[in-house]
Image 1 (cartoon, rainbow, N blue to C red):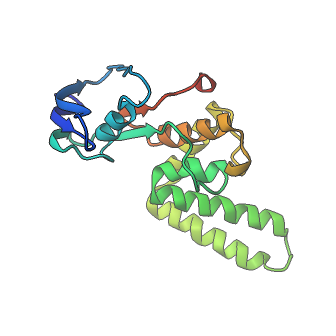
Image 2: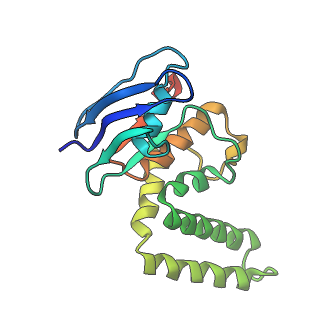
Length: 193
């Protein structure tokens, strides 16, 4: 069975159909490339595959338990926080917990022993540590750290201050940290080599 499939999918946006009863299957190990002119609908097909765009007719089918991640063509507006925050966000609530722990650790270090607010910051760090234990999230922390290291990303860099290439790499890291079964890259550029 295919990991991901389009079955007789039709999609139109008020004009001629972008897809007319189209079918596609992606099996484990496949590498598929969509080629087409600008505006031909390549990004829309990827949105169909990742589930963010429903078809007008037909079905998008995923094998049970299959995870899909997509690196968007453009850097989305409004992405905030550090590179660590952006990458960890790929893990959902566990990632948000990891990011809060990361920031709490930085606060403790910045306040120094005996500084005003140090004890409260230390208690918050301890509370988050226990929450990570209860969630079994330490392996997720290792995944985030590994992806950051492999892509040579500075976890403490503000995402907004990063170059366009570094932003795309951070967004790729966010997709990779999920360890998806299917990774969709929408117009990856040379800086992702």
